[in-house]
Image (tube, rainbow, N blue to C red):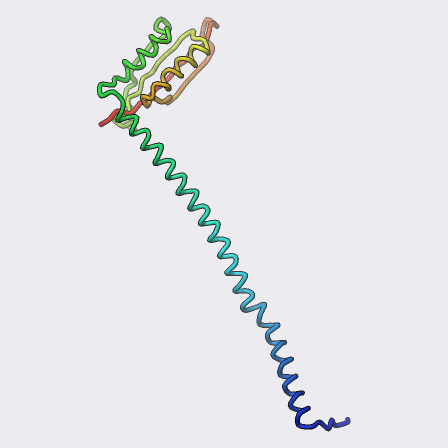
Length: 175
């Protein structure tokens, strides 16, 4: 084998070049497993944080809307007449809709899990037309007296003239 006769500057250049090549190879192996991996993990964490932030903003917005609705309901409850009588209110709406002859109105007994300030009324309507029922419900809801439909059962009337309905209406009273 032939020996290379290199001058000291060439030897130094060869050593420096070899060392540089070795360092480049080490960096090529280290970067994907070290900093690159950490960069990818950090990027994924950042994306996850963005998703969590967006979800938190949506939850906050939803909660703000719920609180606003609750405030509006409480305001409507406070603005309702002090002597509001739920049964009399429903009876008045039945009379206004000219359904007295086809209606039976009664309080429902309070269930164990029903709060004291939540009275329920059952209204049975027999032989009522769909338009009459819709007009009645519109009159109840349009009053802004915080009356809600708890349950509604509708079927054809026994004599096939109109509908037979059982409406359970509920409201909230101030305690």
